[in-house]
Length: 449
Image 1 (cartoon, rainbow, N blue to C red):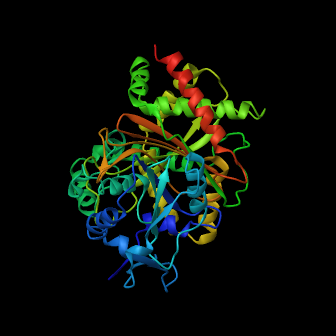
Image 2 (cartoon, helix red, strand yellow):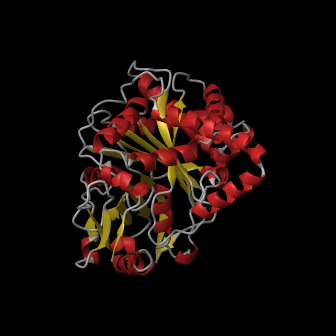
Image 3 (cartoon, one colour):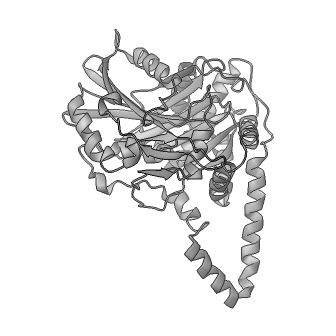
């Protein structure tokens, strides 16, 4: 059975290029070897049987201008999508990062359903790591985290939802179905005075559309350049104490996200400063979830995100100054229709010609260095069989020539930072990560009192 791909999903498929495959990478690590047969059974029962898109491949439309098709893969073989290997000695963090970096560099096979799972035994002795790669056209990073949670012992796969109340509550009314819009039109006919409010909202949305399309006025930095497609990954497998991050947030009337952004800004300040390459701001894109709170994962998954432009104040070495600036900038975004407008632009640009779409992606590259994600996960111990999940990290795909993808994922009382960069621009993400750790210690000391 086939179906047409939605524009919101097609943008990630059509926007892929050689140097930036639109692949979402998720890495999970466990305290002991993983039962691969149990993992295969979980994927079959909880993912493949419930989400038919996981057994479908993509076929280009024969009619110009129409979206690609999802088509059932009648030759689907689960063994082609879940492999088991042993990490080369010494099986440490460097070995795992090298393995996953090489996999991240290679695009997924377009002749098959676009996902693959590598089970890597022998991590840090008797542990195990799992690298899950899924194409962004199947779903966004938040949906993929929810999808992977269905394979752990502690969750009923029918009850998994993806939620972000802080954003979804703000934008859930921005777009309606045809029925809702018809009802709204009828209401306005009886209450013409409300047209003024609608007009103001429309003008504000138009203003934000212009701001999102036009490059931000930021100085270019050494974190931007021309990628060659060779990806480097680095993450902290031990993470930070989430309770400490929350304590810092409470002490400064801030959110966990504000603290994370402050730490990342400070790490980039340190990295640029030691190379005598400081700039005032680094422009990043922040993904936000546009699902309604508690909305379950649909059978066909899909993308329901917006991308918000945020300038990280990297010029200052004072974490309190950076926190204040970031709080003001984030509040402006939260008070605006920017999340919904961003989603609208993502969908709309898919309808343009490839030349125009590439031009819009080039504007994204001019104004932005990459993507920064903060994902809250479940705060309880998780297992697959007898293996306990020690941590997880993940990154989405990037458009055009973007270089840096930074992520902070919290699970079971810890928050794990990680980075993906292009080796032609930033060959040493592990050094940026060292600065993330040092900056977290400074933020805890300076702002945690």
